[in-house]
Image (cartoon, rainbow, N blue to C red; front, side, top):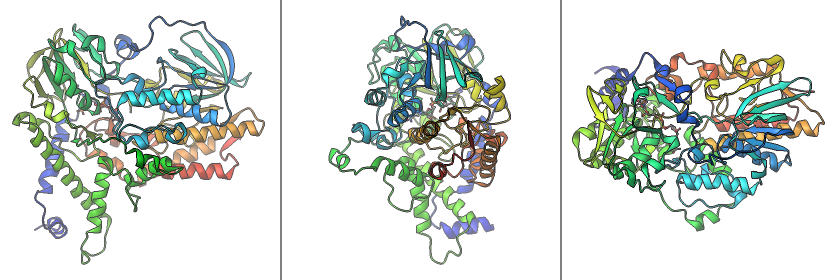
Length: 613
Ligand code: NDP
């Protein structure tokens, strides 16, 4: 027996699978999907494809207003959760002279656009829906569906009186620093001239739909749309189903990520024929949603929501040695690793990093074996069941949770078309999707192909930001992100951004946004309190933060090495994470540690690394 096999046998004498065989299978499944063109395989929803992003099926198409020519204190760009939280936190501090500029017709961002049937948030509602204590709202279920989340954004808007500050159906076209007036000039497609002392960009990480660059995609003459612009006029029905207009339609859906998992059961129920074109299957775990227990909910004491969010983040980071409050599919794997370590035999010798890594891998194999067994239990067609099994480690792709998706493939009218060998759909023609040499004629193609999440920041923001001396933010960032705390950059006075750049990441996005919003609100309040007008990160402070991000990314959690072994996807830049610029990494120790850094910075009270004038 090799030393490694011996060690494996000693640590796990009862294993009912061969880890080496699984590793080899994972490697094969990864390698066959890797494409030379990496992220370039996608086309931007711009120019000839612009309608996939620019069309707004939900807003009033006749809306008009006169251009504004105004001076304000703050311009917040974006009214998704990040912009909304920013605005709410500004109001709390008594800063009321601001506008929120948003291309959609209401608050909501992701939840304004994503109204596809079955859309739901897979992060527990008690953590995800912000400001629950302030607004007194009790989520209906442990996992909220999209309409409830969208209404909550409207509730926050009303609670903080933010509708008066909103400029909806308005796209920013340029943001330019004016040295003379010491303010920003914000221009919009409605001809507005907005002079703002501060600008806070909150344009969100998943705001631009992306399309696969499948040969012939332009030639298709049938109906097509992206899931984030669901066309209910065409399908009939609403978020809860009733897609009755599809009863005589052959439908193709391309993509099987978190979005497809939620809407496929509805398409399968209503379409005459549904072809699901799958390159990589998602891991589909149990949802097991449940109604909120009102008595439990009302018994939570002040500060409970922040404590719960922090507990969730600490659990995911393997830093929670107490109760796992959320206790769901996200935290399950961490619990398993913890149990494996706790059940270690006393005579196992010293615990080293190799053993921790091995125990994590075995727990991961066991979890994924359960996910794969579930496919066999739910799908009656053996070929489909085989195709639907994911062969990679948990967290290589976003975990998904659904109780109807897998069973949909047992229906006679639903077929999964595995396009892994050809690394994606082969071709699209005037009336068909071609895969594995076969042509599938369809009336409609639905693109469940996700968003531009890791492409260049400028590609995701369709306006330029010009700072001191007319320098573009994107030139400043051309060799990688350059920020202080992920929130502001040198050369861009009174400019802040809320998002996922060089800061503490969490799958619970709203908590990140809220923490950043509070921090930026505190900085703006400090500028006002000191009777100053302009604040700017120093070049030295920016460089120090960049250096820290890079050092931690290299020395840190091994996330890059983990992702390198994964099947391609946006998590690992389509299999090219080794080439990723470590400057664009998040703050590796995680969101709780990042918040501690921000708190310490605020508590010091000297705005270290920023200059006032
Ligand atoms: P994803 O990017 O996760 O998935 C895109 C899908 O399109 C993948 O299955 C991909 O396959 C497939 N695809 C791309 N190109 C081709 C091609 N040429 N041929 C065939 N298939 C192709 O997008 P989603 O919209 O599903 O999810 C995006 C993100 O939105 C999630 O990761 C999550 O962050 C968020 N989301 C969150 C939800 C929540 O509950 N909180 C729910 C829904 C979405 P492959 O995997 O092989 O690349």
